[in-house]
Length: 396
View 1: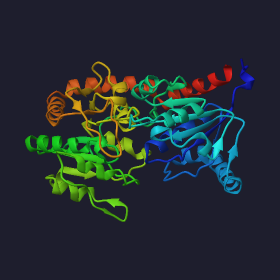
View 2: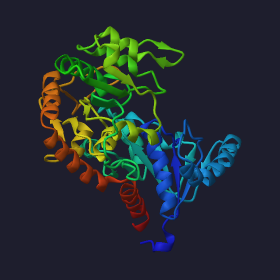
View 3: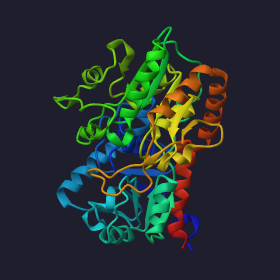
View 4: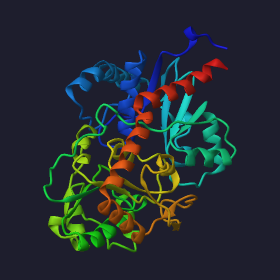
């Protein structure tokens, strides 16, 4: 058994920190928390679209300066080897394999959020190459344990509780009842359900306003939204920009009924969330706990959540408005197996929107309960849990 002096003080983060994607926000906060806990985070990949406050930039600067030198070294030698742990970002079916990674440590930890439950024997073999597989939801962890993997630890994502906390509503949109929706546009995230439910709700409540942050830098998965039976087609893409507004108008929303928030950096989301009256996430699948939903709930926003996959980890008695009336989802490309995915209904989504609208006191109570729960899932707490799991590898 290792003594405390033998436990690693340095850890390598093997993906790009960013301000505009789930992986990127995870990486940014992982690095920040390691610094705050007296650890030495190491980064060899350059950040991508990193937009942070001056205080956070100053905190990250030494890590980013060292990253430039490591990237230069990687380009020269092709493989970086460390005598401390490396955390690797993995895709569906545990790609890439460990021998394809350009950095390796004395312990190698694979971090995965998988949507497809199609896991090949080759994928399971790749998973076993890693000393530890870290999942981000009970659903993902149980799937892997059911496939016979024993090297699995489940650690949820976190929220930055310094900015995502309950605040008095900002009346950014006077005399409007504001419904917030986030997450990159794709069929899995069910924006088609949001649009159709909102259209029905807006017909009865013309003051309703939909604000959304659906844009992202990866447009490849967006065309899956055309699988919907509720909406027509998909947004056109011009110069890598999705023309979501035009698509919404073609699907029957008036131009004055919605506000496209664009691709906001994480630090700017709180001011938009606090301008809303409710949030809606009828997602068909979430491999993690849905970071955008976590952030809305952390701010006390009454939230509608589909009760499936990773979102189940957020649902407690009386802390949200769960969508329970769900049916099975049929597989579609690129997801050939969708065990655990569920299809919510527009009717139940509208019903819960009406409940929140009609009883603001109860909505506030549920929002407060959600905020209390989400405080236990701060990035500080979650990275403590991650460190504990990694250190356990050295105590064997």
